[in-house]
Length: 493
Image 1 (tube, rainbow, N blue to C red):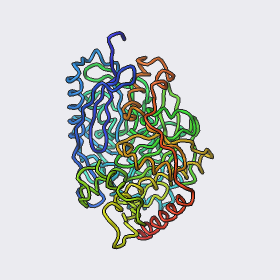
Image 2 (cartoon, rainbow, N blue to C red):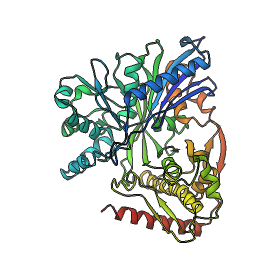
Image 3 (tube, one colour):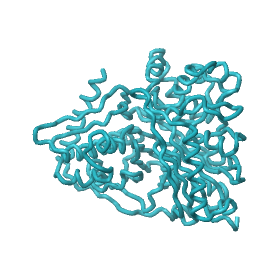
Protein backbone atom coordinates (compact mmCIF):
# COMPACT_ATOMS: atom_id res chain seq x y z
CA UNK A 1 0.00 0.00 0.00
CA UNK A 2 2.48 2.65 -1.21
CA UNK A 3 0.06 5.59 -0.85
CA UNK A 4 -1.05 4.77 2.67
CA UNK A 5 0.48 7.00 5.33
CA UNK A 6 -1.76 6.54 8.35
CA UNK A 7 -4.02 4.42 10.45
CA UNK A 8 -7.18 6.25 11.53
CA UNK A 9 -8.00 5.44 15.15
CA UNK A 10 -11.45 6.18 16.55
CA UNK A 11 -11.45 6.35 20.34
CA UNK A 12 -15.03 6.63 21.56
CA UNK A 13 -14.94 7.06 25.33
CA UNK A 14 -17.28 7.79 28.21
CA UNK A 15 -16.80 11.56 28.14
CA UNK A 16 -15.67 12.28 24.58
CA UNK A 17 -15.26 11.04 21.03
CA UNK A 18 -11.80 11.33 19.50
CA UNK A 19 -10.16 10.64 16.17
CA UNK A 20 -6.39 10.29 15.66
CA UNK A 21 -4.11 9.80 12.69
CA UNK A 22 -1.16 7.55 13.52
CA UNK A 23 1.86 7.11 11.26
CA UNK A 24 4.18 4.13 10.73
CA UNK A 25 6.47 5.23 13.57
CA UNK A 26 3.52 5.08 15.98
CA UNK A 27 3.47 8.87 16.27
CA UNK A 28 0.23 10.83 16.62
CA UNK A 29 0.04 13.14 13.61
CA UNK A 30 -3.35 14.73 14.33
CA UNK A 31 -6.07 14.61 16.97
CA UNK A 32 -9.64 15.90 17.13
CA UNK A 33 -11.94 15.61 20.14
CA UNK A 34 -15.50 16.50 21.13
CA UNK A 35 -17.14 16.00 24.50
CA UNK A 36 -20.41 14.10 24.77
CA UNK A 37 -23.27 15.00 27.09
CA UNK A 38 -23.80 12.97 30.27
CA UNK A 39 -27.44 12.37 31.18
CA UNK A 40 -28.44 11.41 34.74
CA UNK A 41 -32.24 10.92 34.62
CA UNK A 42 -32.37 9.28 38.07
CA UNK A 43 -29.86 8.56 40.85
CA UNK A 44 -27.62 5.73 39.68
CA UNK A 45 -28.71 6.07 36.04
CA UNK A 46 -26.23 7.24 33.37
CA UNK A 47 -27.17 7.65 29.70
CA UNK A 48 -25.76 8.97 26.42
CA UNK A 49 -27.58 9.95 23.25
CA UNK A 50 -26.56 7.36 20.60
CA UNK A 51 -26.96 9.93 17.84
CA UNK A 52 -24.61 12.28 19.68
CA UNK A 53 -22.08 9.46 20.02
CA UNK A 54 -22.22 8.93 16.27
CA UNK A 55 -22.32 12.63 15.39
CA UNK A 56 -19.30 13.54 17.51
CA UNK A 57 -17.33 10.56 16.23
CA UNK A 58 -18.22 11.36 12.62
CA UNK A 59 -17.33 15.02 13.07
CA UNK A 60 -13.97 14.34 14.74
CA UNK A 61 -13.15 11.90 11.95
CA UNK A 62 -13.87 14.59 9.37
CA UNK A 63 -11.98 17.21 11.37
CA UNK A 64 -8.81 15.15 11.73
CA UNK A 65 -8.82 14.34 8.02
CA UNK A 66 -9.40 17.96 7.10
CA UNK A 67 -6.74 19.46 9.36
CA UNK A 68 -4.16 17.03 7.97
CA UNK A 69 -5.23 17.40 4.33
CA UNK A 70 -5.55 13.63 4.40
CA UNK A 71 -7.52 11.72 1.78
CA UNK A 72 -9.19 8.34 2.17
CA UNK A 73 -6.54 6.72 -0.05
CA UNK A 74 -3.85 7.75 2.46
CA UNK A 75 -5.57 5.81 5.26
CA UNK A 76 -4.60 2.14 5.32
CA UNK A 77 -7.30 1.12 7.79
CA UNK A 78 -9.56 2.21 10.64
CA UNK A 79 -9.16 0.91 14.18
CA UNK A 80 -11.93 1.39 16.74
CA UNK A 81 -11.60 1.47 20.52
CA UNK A 82 -14.75 2.06 22.52
CA UNK A 83 -16.26 2.46 25.95
CA UNK A 84 -17.35 -1.06 26.82
CA UNK A 85 -20.62 -2.48 28.18
CA UNK A 86 -22.52 0.66 27.14
CA UNK A 87 -25.67 -0.70 25.52
CA UNK A 88 -27.57 0.52 22.46
CA UNK A 89 -30.67 -0.98 20.84
CA UNK A 90 -31.77 0.28 17.43
CA UNK A 91 -34.14 -0.43 14.54
CA UNK A 92 -32.61 -2.79 12.01
CA UNK A 93 -34.62 -1.22 9.19
CA UNK A 94 -33.54 2.37 9.60
CA UNK A 95 -30.85 2.50 12.31
CA UNK A 96 -32.96 4.65 14.65
CA UNK A 97 -32.07 4.19 18.34
CA UNK A 98 -35.02 3.06 20.46
CA UNK A 99 -33.65 4.31 23.77
CA UNK A 100 -30.68 6.27 25.02
CA UNK A 101 -27.43 4.34 25.38
CA UNK A 102 -27.28 2.90 28.90
CA UNK A 103 -23.71 3.61 30.03
CA UNK A 104 -21.45 1.07 31.71
CA UNK A 105 -21.64 3.05 34.97
CA UNK A 106 -25.42 2.72 35.14
CA UNK A 107 -26.81 0.72 38.10
CA UNK A 108 -30.53 0.47 37.21
CA UNK A 109 -30.42 -3.27 36.57
CA UNK A 110 -29.14 -4.12 40.06
CA UNK A 111 -32.52 -5.65 41.06
CA UNK A 112 -32.42 -7.97 38.04
CA UNK A 113 -28.88 -9.07 38.93
CA UNK A 114 -30.03 -9.77 42.47
CA UNK A 115 -32.97 -11.81 41.16
CA UNK A 116 -30.66 -13.93 39.01
CA UNK A 117 -28.40 -14.50 42.01
CA UNK A 118 -31.37 -15.57 44.10
CA UNK A 119 -32.17 -18.12 41.39
CA UNK A 120 -28.70 -19.57 41.91
CA UNK A 121 -27.46 -18.55 38.47
CA UNK A 122 -24.32 -16.57 39.29
CA UNK A 123 -22.03 -19.61 39.19
CA UNK A 124 -23.35 -20.53 35.74
CA UNK A 125 -22.83 -17.02 34.38
CA UNK A 126 -19.36 -16.74 35.91
CA UNK A 127 -18.23 -20.16 34.67
CA UNK A 128 -19.35 -19.40 31.11
CA UNK A 129 -18.47 -15.70 30.80
CA UNK A 130 -15.78 -14.97 33.42
CA UNK A 131 -17.99 -12.16 34.72
CA UNK A 132 -20.09 -11.56 37.82
CA UNK A 133 -23.79 -10.77 37.90
CA UNK A 134 -23.47 -7.01 38.14
CA UNK A 135 -25.32 -4.09 36.48
CA UNK A 136 -21.97 -3.09 34.94
CA UNK A 137 -22.38 -5.54 32.06
CA UNK A 138 -24.53 -5.28 28.95
CA UNK A 139 -26.86 -8.26 29.27
CA UNK A 140 -29.11 -6.93 32.02
CA UNK A 141 -29.13 -3.52 30.35
CA UNK A 142 -30.52 -5.13 27.17
CA UNK A 143 -33.19 -6.83 29.23
CA UNK A 144 -34.16 -3.52 30.84
CA UNK A 145 -34.49 -1.79 27.45
CA UNK A 146 -36.62 -4.58 25.98
CA UNK A 147 -38.90 -4.32 29.01
CA UNK A 148 -39.28 -0.55 28.63
CA UNK A 149 -39.89 0.00 24.89
CA UNK A 150 -43.17 -0.84 23.13
CA UNK A 151 -43.33 -4.49 22.04
CA UNK A 152 -39.59 -4.80 22.71
CA UNK A 153 -39.49 -8.56 23.27
CA UNK A 154 -41.70 -9.37 20.32
CA UNK A 155 -39.83 -7.10 17.93
CA UNK A 156 -36.42 -8.37 19.07
CA UNK A 157 -37.53 -11.96 18.53
CA UNK A 158 -38.74 -11.07 15.04
CA UNK A 159 -35.29 -9.77 14.14
CA UNK A 160 -36.42 -6.16 13.90
CA UNK A 161 -34.02 -4.85 16.55
CA UNK A 162 -30.23 -4.76 16.84
CA UNK A 163 -28.20 -4.70 20.01
CA UNK A 164 -24.68 -3.39 20.01
CA UNK A 165 -21.97 -2.03 22.20
CA UNK A 166 -20.53 1.23 20.92
CA UNK A 167 -18.15 -0.47 18.46
CA UNK A 168 -21.10 -2.21 16.78
CA UNK A 169 -23.06 1.03 16.65
CA UNK A 170 -20.20 2.94 15.02
CA UNK A 171 -19.52 0.20 12.47
CA UNK A 172 -23.22 0.03 11.61
CA UNK A 173 -23.18 3.76 10.91
CA UNK A 174 -19.79 3.78 9.15
CA UNK A 175 -21.04 1.05 6.79
CA UNK A 176 -24.55 2.53 6.41
CA UNK A 177 -26.09 -0.52 8.03
CA UNK A 178 -24.30 -3.14 5.94
CA UNK A 179 -22.42 -4.75 8.84
CA UNK A 180 -23.55 -5.68 12.35
CA UNK A 181 -20.42 -6.97 14.10
CA UNK A 182 -18.41 -6.85 17.28
CA UNK A 183 -15.16 -8.46 18.43
CA UNK A 184 -14.49 -10.93 21.21
CA UNK A 185 -13.11 -8.28 23.61
CA UNK A 186 -16.44 -6.44 23.52
CA UNK A 187 -18.61 -9.55 23.29
CA UNK A 188 -16.95 -10.89 26.43
CA UNK A 189 -18.37 -7.94 28.42
CA UNK A 190 -22.03 -8.70 27.78
CA UNK A 191 -22.80 -11.68 30.11
CA UNK A 192 -23.88 -13.49 26.93
CA UNK A 193 -20.57 -14.72 25.45
CA UNK A 194 -19.03 -18.07 26.33
CA UNK A 195 -15.30 -17.49 26.81
CA UNK A 196 -14.42 -21.13 26.20
CA UNK A 197 -16.39 -21.63 22.98
CA UNK A 198 -15.87 -18.10 21.67
CA UNK A 199 -19.57 -17.81 20.77
CA UNK A 200 -22.86 -16.47 22.10
CA UNK A 201 -24.28 -18.84 24.71
CA UNK A 202 -27.89 -19.91 24.10
CA UNK A 203 -28.49 -20.99 27.71
CA UNK A 204 -27.44 -17.60 29.07
CA UNK A 205 -29.51 -15.84 26.42
CA UNK A 206 -32.46 -17.92 27.58
CA UNK A 207 -32.08 -16.90 31.22
CA UNK A 208 -32.14 -13.23 30.20
CA UNK A 209 -34.77 -13.83 27.49
CA UNK A 210 -32.63 -12.06 24.89
CA UNK A 211 -33.29 -13.22 21.31
CA UNK A 212 -30.15 -14.26 19.46
CA UNK A 213 -31.49 -12.49 16.38
CA UNK A 214 -30.58 -9.08 17.81
CA UNK A 215 -26.90 -9.90 18.46
CA UNK A 216 -23.97 -8.93 16.20
CA UNK A 217 -21.62 -11.40 14.53
CA UNK A 218 -18.35 -11.83 16.44
CA UNK A 219 -15.21 -11.19 14.36
CA UNK A 220 -11.47 -10.94 15.06
CA UNK A 221 -10.11 -7.90 16.88
CA UNK A 222 -7.39 -7.73 14.22
CA UNK A 223 -8.70 -8.49 10.76
CA UNK A 224 -10.81 -6.78 8.11
CA UNK A 225 -14.35 -6.78 9.49
CA UNK A 226 -15.99 -4.30 7.13
CA UNK A 227 -15.38 -1.44 4.74
CA UNK A 228 -16.56 2.05 5.50
CA UNK A 229 -18.72 4.11 3.19
CA UNK A 230 -15.44 5.71 2.01
CA UNK A 231 -14.09 2.23 1.21
CA UNK A 232 -11.55 2.15 4.05
CA UNK A 233 -10.98 -1.20 5.76
CA UNK A 234 -12.28 -1.36 9.33
CA UNK A 235 -9.65 -3.80 10.54
CA UNK A 236 -9.20 -3.21 14.26
CA UNK A 237 -11.88 -3.48 16.97
CA UNK A 238 -11.27 -3.61 20.70
CA UNK A 239 -12.89 -2.52 23.91
CA UNK A 240 -10.93 0.45 25.19
CA UNK A 241 -9.19 -1.37 28.04
CA UNK A 242 -8.11 -4.34 25.96
CA UNK A 243 -6.95 -1.87 23.31
CA UNK A 244 -4.82 -0.12 25.94
CA UNK A 245 -3.37 -3.47 27.04
CA UNK A 246 -2.28 -4.07 23.44
CA UNK A 247 -1.11 -0.48 23.00
CA UNK A 248 1.02 -0.75 26.17
CA UNK A 249 2.53 -3.91 24.64
CA UNK A 250 1.45 -6.07 27.58
CA UNK A 251 1.46 -9.14 25.37
CA UNK A 252 3.15 -11.68 27.65
CA UNK A 253 1.52 -13.45 30.61
CA UNK A 254 1.94 -11.50 33.85
CA UNK A 255 2.31 -8.06 32.24
CA UNK A 256 -0.10 -5.50 33.72
CA UNK A 257 -1.41 -2.11 32.65
CA UNK A 258 -3.71 0.34 34.41
CA UNK A 259 -5.69 3.09 32.71
CA UNK A 260 -6.60 6.10 34.85
CA UNK A 261 -9.67 7.56 33.23
CA UNK A 262 -13.19 8.17 34.49
CA UNK A 263 -12.61 4.88 36.28
CA UNK A 264 -9.48 2.76 36.60
CA UNK A 265 -9.14 -0.42 34.62
CA UNK A 266 -6.36 -2.84 35.37
CA UNK A 267 -5.66 -5.80 33.11
CA UNK A 268 -3.14 -8.62 33.42
CA UNK A 269 -2.36 -10.57 30.26
CA UNK A 270 -2.81 -14.30 30.84
CA UNK A 271 -1.94 -15.57 27.36
CA UNK A 272 -3.89 -18.57 26.07
CA UNK A 273 -5.19 -19.39 29.55
CA UNK A 274 -8.53 -18.36 30.98
CA UNK A 275 -7.68 -17.74 34.64
CA UNK A 276 -10.71 -18.37 36.83
CA UNK A 277 -10.65 -15.79 39.59
CA UNK A 278 -11.06 -16.67 43.24
CA UNK A 279 -10.75 -12.99 44.19
CA UNK A 280 -13.83 -11.74 42.35
CA UNK A 281 -11.84 -10.39 39.42
CA UNK A 282 -13.05 -10.83 35.86
CA UNK A 283 -11.78 -13.20 33.22
CA UNK A 284 -12.08 -11.54 29.84
CA UNK A 285 -11.08 -11.89 26.21
CA UNK A 286 -8.07 -9.71 25.45
CA UNK A 287 -8.14 -9.92 21.64
CA UNK A 288 -8.24 -12.33 18.73
CA UNK A 289 -6.39 -12.59 15.45
CA UNK A 290 -6.75 -15.26 12.77
CA UNK A 291 -9.16 -17.04 15.09
CA UNK A 292 -6.59 -17.27 17.91
CA UNK A 293 -7.87 -15.77 21.16
CA UNK A 294 -5.87 -14.46 24.12
CA UNK A 295 -7.17 -13.62 27.57
CA UNK A 296 -6.74 -11.31 30.54
CA UNK A 297 -7.69 -10.86 34.16
CA UNK A 298 -9.36 -7.54 34.89
CA UNK A 299 -10.25 -5.45 37.88
CA UNK A 300 -12.35 -2.32 37.52
CA UNK A 301 -12.45 0.76 39.73
CA UNK A 302 -15.68 2.56 38.87
CA UNK A 303 -14.66 6.04 40.03
CA UNK A 304 -11.13 7.43 39.56
CA UNK A 305 -10.72 10.61 37.49
CA UNK A 306 -14.41 11.27 38.11
CA UNK A 307 -13.69 11.88 41.80
CA UNK A 308 -11.36 14.73 40.83
CA UNK A 309 -14.20 16.18 38.73
CA UNK A 310 -16.34 15.95 41.87
CA UNK A 311 -13.77 17.98 43.81
CA UNK A 312 -14.07 20.60 41.07
CA UNK A 313 -17.80 20.58 40.29
CA UNK A 314 -19.35 19.22 43.47
CA UNK A 315 -17.22 20.76 46.20
CA UNK A 316 -15.60 23.66 44.34
CA UNK A 317 -12.20 22.92 45.90
CA UNK A 318 -10.35 23.38 42.59
CA UNK A 319 -11.04 25.42 39.46
CA UNK A 320 -9.78 22.81 37.00
CA UNK A 321 -8.85 19.15 37.35
CA UNK A 322 -5.13 19.79 36.86
CA UNK A 323 -5.12 21.97 40.00
CA UNK A 324 -5.57 18.96 42.28
CA UNK A 325 -1.90 17.96 42.25
CA UNK A 326 -0.61 21.29 43.58
CA UNK A 327 -3.35 21.46 46.22
CA UNK A 328 -2.67 17.90 47.39
CA UNK A 329 1.09 18.50 47.44
CA UNK A 330 0.67 21.53 49.72
CA UNK A 331 0.32 19.20 52.73
CA UNK A 332 2.84 16.47 53.68
CA UNK A 333 0.23 13.74 54.25
CA UNK A 334 -3.49 13.05 54.33
CA UNK A 335 -3.90 14.21 57.95
CA UNK A 336 -5.71 10.97 58.76
CA UNK A 337 -8.38 11.55 56.08
CA UNK A 338 -9.54 8.80 53.72
CA UNK A 339 -11.86 9.22 50.74
CA UNK A 340 -13.71 6.11 49.50
CA UNK A 341 -15.13 7.27 46.13
CA UNK A 342 -17.96 4.73 45.93
CA UNK A 343 -20.27 7.08 44.03
CA UNK A 344 -21.63 4.20 41.91
CA UNK A 345 -20.82 1.37 44.29
CA UNK A 346 -17.48 -0.40 44.58
CA UNK A 347 -15.99 -2.51 41.81
CA UNK A 348 -13.46 -5.34 42.08
CA UNK A 349 -12.65 -7.05 44.33
CA UNK A 350 -15.53 -5.82 46.52
CA UNK A 351 -18.39 -5.74 43.97
CA UNK A 352 -20.81 -3.88 46.20
CA UNK A 353 -23.27 -1.93 44.02
CA UNK A 354 -24.87 -0.41 47.12
CA UNK A 355 -21.71 0.97 48.78
CA UNK A 356 -21.79 4.74 49.28
CA UNK A 357 -18.98 7.26 48.99
CA UNK A 358 -17.43 8.29 52.27
CA UNK A 359 -14.90 10.68 53.80
CA UNK A 360 -13.52 9.51 57.16
CA UNK A 361 -11.05 10.97 59.65
CA UNK A 362 -12.25 14.57 59.49
CA UNK A 363 -11.11 16.91 62.29
CA UNK A 364 -11.10 20.66 62.85
CA UNK A 365 -7.61 20.63 61.38
CA UNK A 366 -8.73 19.08 58.09
CA UNK A 367 -8.22 21.36 55.11
CA UNK A 368 -9.21 21.30 51.46
CA UNK A 369 -5.65 20.14 50.75
CA UNK A 370 -6.05 17.09 53.01
CA UNK A 371 -9.26 16.14 51.21
CA UNK A 372 -7.58 16.60 47.82
CA UNK A 373 -4.64 14.44 48.86
CA UNK A 374 -6.91 11.76 50.32
CA UNK A 375 -8.92 11.79 47.11
CA UNK A 376 -5.85 11.00 45.00
CA UNK A 377 -4.73 8.39 47.50
CA UNK A 378 -8.18 6.78 47.33
CA UNK A 379 -7.60 6.12 43.64
CA UNK A 380 -4.25 4.45 44.37
CA UNK A 381 -5.58 2.31 47.24
CA UNK A 382 -8.28 0.85 45.01
CA UNK A 383 -5.62 -0.13 42.49
CA UNK A 384 -3.50 -1.70 45.22
CA UNK A 385 -6.47 -3.91 46.09
CA UNK A 386 -6.59 -5.01 42.44
CA UNK A 387 -2.87 -5.84 42.18
CA UNK A 388 -3.06 -7.92 45.35
CA UNK A 389 -6.05 -9.85 43.99
CA UNK A 390 -4.37 -10.44 40.61
CA UNK A 391 -1.23 -11.82 42.22
CA UNK A 392 -3.30 -14.25 44.29
CA UNK A 393 -5.33 -15.41 41.28
CA UNK A 394 -2.48 -15.78 38.82
CA UNK A 395 0.30 -16.88 41.13
CA UNK A 396 2.49 -14.27 39.42
CA UNK A 397 4.23 -11.44 41.28
CA UNK A 398 3.61 -8.20 39.39
CA UNK A 399 7.00 -6.65 38.57
CA UNK A 400 5.86 -3.31 37.18
CA UNK A 401 2.69 -1.42 36.39
CA UNK A 402 2.39 0.30 33.02
CA UNK A 403 0.06 3.28 33.22
CA UNK A 404 -1.88 5.56 30.89
CA UNK A 405 -4.95 7.79 30.94
CA UNK A 406 -5.44 11.37 32.01
CA UNK A 407 -4.72 10.97 35.72
CA UNK A 408 -1.43 9.21 34.93
CA UNK A 409 -0.10 12.71 34.22
CA UNK A 410 -0.37 13.44 37.95
CA UNK A 411 3.14 12.85 39.31
CA UNK A 412 2.04 12.89 42.95
CA UNK A 413 -0.54 10.18 42.27
CA UNK A 414 1.91 8.06 40.29
CA UNK A 415 4.57 8.29 43.02
CA UNK A 416 2.04 7.36 45.69
CA UNK A 417 0.88 4.47 43.51
CA UNK A 418 4.43 3.15 43.29
CA UNK A 419 4.88 3.58 47.05
CA UNK A 420 1.68 1.78 48.00
CA UNK A 421 2.34 -1.07 45.51
CA UNK A 422 6.10 -1.37 46.20
CA UNK A 423 6.78 -1.82 42.46
CA UNK A 424 7.86 0.59 39.71
CA UNK A 425 5.13 2.49 37.91
CA UNK A 426 6.08 3.05 34.26
CA UNK A 427 4.58 5.84 32.17
CA UNK A 428 5.03 5.64 28.37
CA UNK A 429 6.28 8.42 26.15
CA UNK A 430 3.17 8.21 23.95
CA UNK A 431 0.10 8.62 26.14
CA UNK A 432 -2.50 7.42 23.67
CA UNK A 433 -2.35 3.73 24.55
CA UNK A 434 -6.01 3.06 23.77
CA UNK A 435 -5.87 4.62 20.31
CA UNK A 436 -2.51 2.97 19.63
CA UNK A 437 -3.90 -0.44 20.54
CA UNK A 438 -6.80 -0.08 18.10
CA UNK A 439 -4.43 1.25 15.44
CA UNK A 440 -1.94 -1.57 15.95
CA UNK A 441 -4.71 -4.17 15.58
CA UNK A 442 -5.84 -2.54 12.33
CA UNK A 443 -2.35 -1.94 10.98
CA UNK A 444 -1.16 -5.50 11.59
CA UNK A 445 -4.26 -6.83 9.85
CA UNK A 446 -3.55 -4.93 6.62
CA UNK A 447 0.26 -5.09 6.64
CA UNK A 448 0.81 -1.45 7.57
CA UNK A 449 3.22 -2.77 10.21
CA UNK A 450 5.30 -5.82 9.39
CA UNK A 451 4.90 -7.69 12.67
CA UNK A 452 4.58 -7.32 16.44
CA UNK A 453 8.33 -6.83 16.86
CA UNK A 454 8.18 -3.67 14.76
CA UNK A 455 5.57 -2.07 17.01
CA UNK A 456 7.24 -3.37 20.20
CA UNK A 457 10.27 -1.26 19.28
CA UNK A 458 8.07 1.87 19.16
CA UNK A 459 7.03 1.62 22.84
CA UNK A 460 9.24 3.97 24.88
CA UNK A 461 9.28 5.02 28.54
CA UNK A 462 8.63 8.59 29.61
CA UNK A 463 9.25 8.17 33.35
CA UNK A 464 9.61 5.41 35.93
CA UNK A 465 8.33 6.07 39.46
CA UNK A 466 10.28 3.93 41.95
CA UNK A 467 8.82 3.11 45.39
CA UNK A 468 10.28 5.20 48.23
CA UNK A 469 7.90 4.80 51.19
CA UNK A 470 8.91 2.82 54.30
CA UNK A 471 7.17 -0.50 54.93
CA UNK A 472 5.79 0.73 58.27
CA UNK A 473 4.25 3.84 56.74
CA UNK A 474 2.77 1.83 53.88
CA UNK A 475 1.27 -0.70 56.28
CA UNK A 476 -0.33 1.99 58.42
CA UNK A 477 -1.88 3.72 55.41
CA UNK A 478 -3.29 0.48 54.01
CA UNK A 479 -4.76 -0.38 57.40
CA UNK A 480 -6.55 2.97 57.49
CA UNK A 481 -7.86 2.39 53.96
CA UNK A 482 -9.26 -1.04 54.84
CA UNK A 483 -11.08 0.43 57.82
CA UNK A 484 -12.60 3.15 55.61
CA UNK A 485 -13.77 0.57 53.04
CA UNK A 486 -15.33 -1.51 55.79
CA UNK A 487 -17.33 1.52 56.88
CA UNK A 488 -18.43 2.33 53.31
CA UNK A 489 -19.61 -1.21 52.62
CA UNK A 490 -21.25 -1.62 56.03
CA UNK A 491 -23.53 1.29 55.17
CA UNK A 492 -24.87 -0.68 52.19
CA UNK A 493 -26.03 -3.64 54.26
